Length: 303
Image (cartoon, rainbow, N blue to C red; front, top):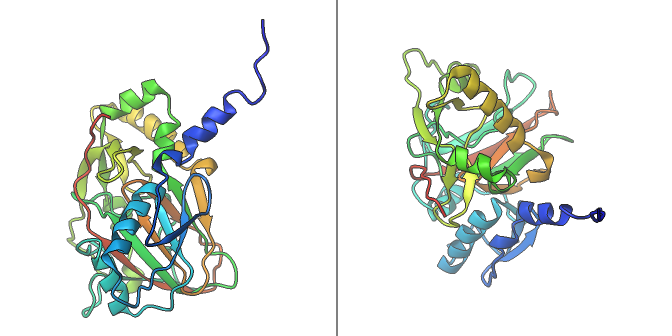
């Protein structure tokens, strides 16, 4: 019996996890990969000005290809500038539970400090997947950073899907899941003065495997913050499958870890990406502004 080379399988796995199939040529922006699997740093975009259509088009493609875009070369944007830039990608989403400012209801203030009870995004999730039409993407600029810590982890759901066996892919492609925000949002913003007595929070059903409308690739679409049940399965079966998937999607090889600097920006694609915000800097402060772009209803289409 012949011996198998030590590297056999490893190269195939590296190719599976990488985004080589989504490589593209960009002419209007500069794109530098952070890891082979997820994340690029983007240069050459001035968000304080009227960004050219050619750059918006390439940013849309880069977002779908690489899951999350990082910008290190922007000044502190005003609320008007951040909102105007985000609107180039679609209408803006209003959060169903977070406090809203009277002047800019679409602007979500991210602020954690020594008196905070909870941290935004402390578990793996994709933003507001409980909505009937979950957000396309989210753009966050952190204005004030703690002396250390406060990183955000992003995970590639294309890679998470690709790493599954063919039998598991087929099984999951026929499943839908319930995304329920009651457990995530009820009382969540009480420390910010929100009284949600009588509020009804979104609850919707989405495919477990989602087809990206731009890239055409398949991505896993379940997350531990919002996904509560696999439709058509007994509760213990559903719990066991979700536990496996939640562990699977958070594997380190699918991830990039972003270290925020003052005025850093991350713009992530909620259709193929999950993220988790570390709260390892208490009692120090972290402050910024988030704007979210509306999306459409998730669907699955076999390749």
